[in-house]
Image 1 (cartoon, rainbow, N blue to C red):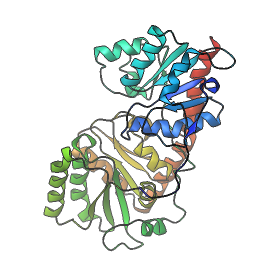
Image 2 (cartoon, rainbow, N blue to C red; image 1 turned 180 degrees about the vertical axis):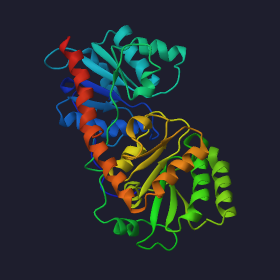
Image 3 (spheres, rainbow, N blue to C red; image 1 turned 60 degrees about the vertical axis):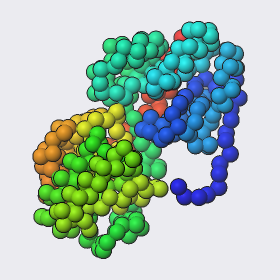
Image 4 (tube, helix red, strand yellow; image 1 turned 90 degrees about the vertical axis):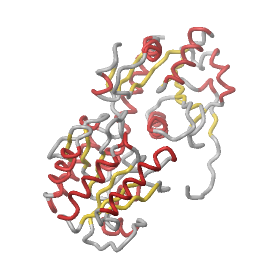
Length: 365
C-alpha cells in the first residue's frame, strides 16, 4: 500500500452511540468494504454509529473491544442500542449479549448470501429483530420478514475520468498503449468462483477481431489458486495474446484502473452482492455481468451493459461482443451506467434506507 500519514484512531464514548457495526474478520472482504463505505455516510445522515473489531481504517468512529462491557449501560437519553451484524461471527455475540447477558440491544442482520442457509445460520437469523437483504436474489433464501436494501457506491470517490486517454496513460499498463487503445477490465480475486477463466476464454475468442482492444485482469492470486492462475497464463500465451491480455496481480489502488477502462466484465459463478460492477458504472463504464449476486438488479441490457447466465462461457462471450460491436456508441451505455448509479445506487440512498430501519427499532423503545 502507498505510504502516507497515519490517521489517529477515532474512539467514541459508548454513551454517545446508538448503533454498533461489528467487523470480526481481519482480511478485507466485500462485507468489510461495505462497512468502510457505509458507516461514514450513515454518520453524515445523523446516525450515532461506531464500528468495533479489526481490519478497519483508523479514521472510522469506533469502540474498543474492551468497551463492549459498557453496553449494559443505556446510551445517553435512554433507549436501546442496535447491533448490526453481517456475518454469523457477529450475529452470535449479539445474541449472547442480548439474551444471556441481558444487555439492552436490538439485533439487525444484513444477508447477502444467495444460497440456502445452514441450520445454525437460520437459528441466528431467527433471533434477529430486523433482517435486511441486499437484493432480490438473497431475499429469496430468507424465511423471515425482511427489507431489501441494495448496496451503494460513494459517487464522490468513484467518478468518471475527466480525460480517458490521460487516465489510461496514468496507469502502469505493460506494452505500447496509444490513445486509440481501449481497455476491458476484470477485477477481483483470480479464482474459479470469480469466473476469471471464462473472461480469459472470451478475450481469446474476441480480441483478434478487435485490434484496438486489450484486457486487464487485476486481483490477488492466493497460493491456493496459483495453479489456476498459471493455467490462465498458459492459455493466453498459447493464443499469442500475452501483450493484449494482462494479469496485473493485486494493485495498490484499483480506482485509477476503473477510470482507465472502457468496459467492465464481472464473470462470477457465485457472488454475495458484488460491488465491482457498480464501482465501474459509477466511473461511467458499462458492465457485462452474469446473474450472480445482485448483478441482475444493477444492469439493464442495452441501457447500461449486458447480462448473461452464470457459468456460460458462450453467453458471456456473446454479451461482451454485443457491447464491442457498438463501437463509439459504447459511450451511451457508459452514460446509462452513470445515471443508474447516481439515481439508484449512491451510498447515501443505502445509508438513508438502513438508518430508517434503525429509526423504526429505536422508536419502539
